[in-house]
Length: 435
Image 1: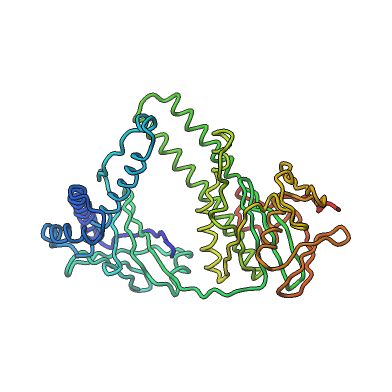
Image 2: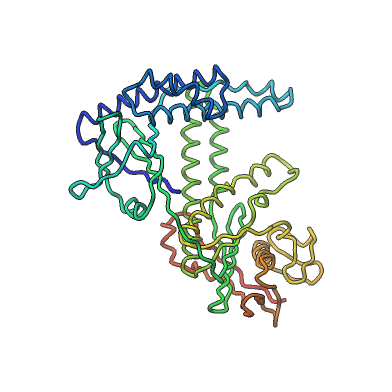
């Protein structure tokens, strides 16, 4: 599933006026449905439909019945979110509960979004242009010209439409079009193993066609972005005394932080997916439960530093882009991959010395992040890691290949234009040390 944002232009002034009227009515329906749901403490969609649908249909008979359904669904989602926050607050210890204020009940102050059910709209071609046709009520249709974008046209080819949204941002109108595409995923013999870290995504690309394996690292500045914006937020909280201005500034810089981190995530995942596509390599990654470290931390600063990378959002985006390119995704257990010797299998916390791995049993010395990639290779039942004449080799169980392990040069194993000159790059790696 994917969301494409395109700009809309009303065909007539009446269409724009009808859209504003629909927005006002839709906002009023959400407010009324929310009042009924809160008053009756409704938490299921079935009960919300029973107590809200008939009331709203009588109040707004001039609107399509699907707008009524979308209104009470949105109100129910707001109330459920409030209930989750309330339950978390109640579970806090009494001392912490006094410091944190009671969650406030949900309210609808402003609304600039109209949810469109799949039955309320359709796309039509008229004189070579793409037109959005929205059914407001029986016999009343709103028509908008869709400004074409290359990425939107590519996404619409062969895709199924889903429930979407109309966003009214000041004088601009946008369509958030949800599309679904069924993709047949194939299994390939080449593999791309990744290890996610706070400053880099380290990878092992195994190409059985050429009997080569390449280790490379994609560096990023997400940790730096998070740390800088944390410093900005602390400065605002200390220096700005006006509550309204403080809240406004925190929202402004919070939005900037989210957008910049999201930009980095998209570029990293796009680069990995393009590498997988070029080499016909399936993805082998860690399980989500293994991505974040568990247990006690030494300080708040260390705790914050290790949680700066949005692991779950990263793997969600990464899986989507691999599936979109018809590549398979497998998950492997990554417990103790950084302290396990890939050659002899010896496990010891003392094997890790900062960013260097030194096995206390066999003396194998290597980059700590690449050791994790090699261990993922062993755990995927693809083969084993061994040393011959001071060089690393991968012996495959499935294809009976002996694959040499090399370190990537300064350039990526693919055209680097996908990064668009953003601070995400393939790092320069030291040569593999001889044993």
